[in-house]
Each structure stands twice: as structure tokens, then as C-alpha cells.
Amino acid sequence: RLDGVEMAPPDPILGVSEAFKRDTSADKLNLGVGAYRTEELQPYVLKVVRKAEERMLAANENKEYLPIEGLASFRKATVELLLGADSPTIKEGRVACLQSLSGTGSLRIGAAFIAKFMPGAVAFISRPTWGNHKNIFADTGVEWREYSYFDPETIGLDFEGMIADLEAAPEGSVVVLHGCAHNPTGVDPTKEQWAKIADVIIAKNLVPFFDVAYQGFATGSLEEDAFAPRYFAERSIEFAVAQSYSKNLGLYAERVGAISWVLNDAGAADRVLSQMKRIARAVYSNPPVHGARIVSEVVGNEEMFEEWKGEMDMMAGRIKAVRQELYDALVKLEPNKDWSFVTKQIGMFSFTGMSPAQCDNMTNKHHIYMTRDGRLSLAGLSSSKCQYLAEAMIDSIDN
Ligand code: PMP
Image 1: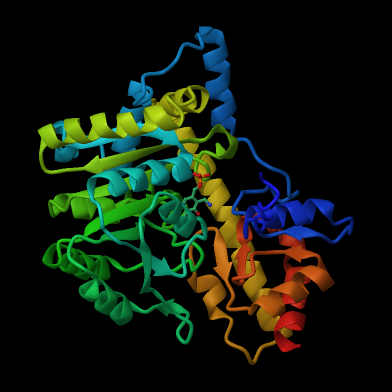
Image 2 (image 1 turned 120 degrees about the vertical axis):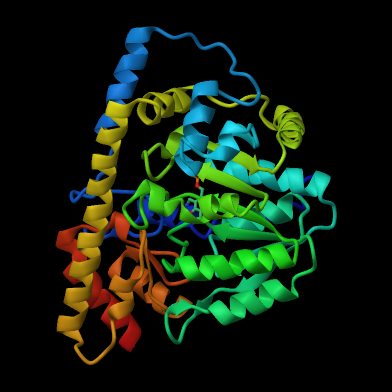
């Protein structure tokens, strides 16, 4: 009966890691997945996470099921991290927060909620965006379309195009917005631009859906990186938001995150939470506890929180340093080309504008693994590999 099932294509991001593992070259470099590595190119577990785990072990906690909505102390810490502890939205009980399976699972529950309670609503996603957005909305039965975002000429934001596309979207459409450190472009709207985006959202009755996967990796400040959702809340715009601790706490494999709806009415928040619980119950029943306990230890404790910020600065600082070194190496090798995009872009990635053929050359000839949209994860680059990478980029671009 299943003879007709065809092979699914490899995932454009995680498939790159699979190919990397098969490569036996000593030069190989994995700049595909956005996962932080040390200068020695090893995975890194935050010290503050280890400390939290030691405390948890000492407390000898049990493995009972969590409630469907997740761990209460985790949910409190997570909405406060996003909106600020003194947010009126939180105080007035207007946030419906469900702990879910990291950013991806949170987006998925959000999409399923949209499919069920906003039937016919189209989700507008940026062109380009993180590849999985399309899968998530398509698989939940939500039609997606794209809005303009990136201008390859300026290697910056196509703000006019974005506004025009949002103005042309049907009333009540969902707009998926990267909260900060846009993946893959590393280009974020300015505060003034966010204000205009909010104007269009209000005028056209659009529903923003923030994807916050990099809080702490854009400006270097957790508060500043949450500017857009905080600003939207201040303007009483109702929105959904998916949060992830994969990158900022390095909890990739723990699958810890949350989906929240920030609403104007506490009663609506209660009802929305009850319906998200109904959806989650039939997907995975209730969320895992280990990562949630780590988060509530770290984010909910002042001293640990400060330590976390120090480690996040260290990670973000290392990425900024290799960004600069890569830029310097490129300028030295080819001074007549404008490489300023490398240092202008923010977050974990460099969006190079390389074509799929050029990306293939990077991989096949130089053993540098990257996604075929031209994105390099600088989180996986070391100082000692910057020269090698710059040479490979120039070879690939020039040929
Ligand atoms: N959204 C964006 C934009 C991302 O880049 C990622 C991770 N690469 C995610 C969501 C989700 O990641 P996770 O499921 O590990 O939280």
C-alpha cells in the first residue's frame, strides 16, 4: 500500500548537517545550522545552565506530568522576558501563554490555532524567511503568501515594498514578523519603521505573529531585542508570539519555548489559553519539564539572570568578532568590492547573496557547508577559519 510513497527532499537546513557529517575532509566547516560553537568549533553548554541543572538534581524533583499549559514559573519568566516584568498586559492578565516545544512547536500550535479560529486567514511571511515557516503554515492548512522584505541592491530592508504588500493584504490576514535578528537576512526594521508597520497593521486590521528566536543576539540587550512586541503591546495591538530558548540559552535539544497571545481583554486570554491547551493535548499532551525548569532557575533568579547575560554577551561578542575578521579578510583579498554587508547585518548569520551554484562550489570544492540561499551561520565560524572562508567565498563568487 505504501509503495507509492516518494522520498521527501532533505531539509534545506538540517540536511546540510547530515551532509557535513558524511564529509571526511579535515577542512570541513559547518556554517549551515544556526547553532553556537566555541572558537574550537565545539558545541557549548552555558555554565549557568549547568549550574541550574546541578541545583535541579540536588532538589531531587520528580518526573510527574506538567499541566498542559506547562510549568507556571517558566511561563511567568518567559512572558516577563518578552514584555518586561512591569508590563500592564501581564498585570492585567491579558497574556495567554502556553509552554510548547521550542520555537517550532510554538509556531505550530499558533498556526493550528489560526487554522481553527481564524478560518480563511492568510499568513504573510517575509521573502526570504526561515525555511520552516512555509512548512509549518502549509502543514496546518493555513495558506501562506510572501511580502517583500529584502532588497538585494542595497542588501537592506525593502521597506516601501513591505508596506505596499501589507497594505494590499486582505483584512484580517496574519503577518509573521521576526521579532529581531531576521533570519536569514540579518536586517531588522528601525524603530521608526516598526511604528509605520504598526500603523498599517492597525489600519488593515492585520494580526501580527512574532517569531522571537534570537532575543539577546541582535542589539546585545534582551530588552532592546524585544522592542517590537513591547511597542505593539503598548499600542494595544493584539498579537501572537512564539519564543525559543534554543539559541539564547543554548537549549537546542531541550525543546523549550512558548506560544502566547497578547490580547486586550483578560477573559479572551483565558478562553484562548483553554483552546491552545485543547490543541496541544491532541498533539503531544503536555510539554517536557527539564528545559522549563532550567529556564525558570535562570530567568526567574536575579543572580543567575545576570550570569546568563554575561554568557550571552560572550557568545554574541564572539560572533561579532568573527564577522569583523571575515570582513577584514575579504577586504584584504578583494579591496575593490563592497563587503560592508558583512558587518552591517546583525545576529547569527551572514546573508551573502551567493547563488545556489556558488553555494554548491563552497561545499563541493571547499567543504564549507551552508544553506543554498547564500546564508552563512557565523555562529559556527572560528577566528582561525576566517581567512579560509574568505578565500572560498571569493573563489566561489568570482568563478
Ligand atoms: N524561528 C526562526 C526564525 C529560527 O531561526 C528558528 C531556529 N533556527 C526557529 C524559529 C526555531 O527553532 P527552535 O524550534 O529550535 O526553537
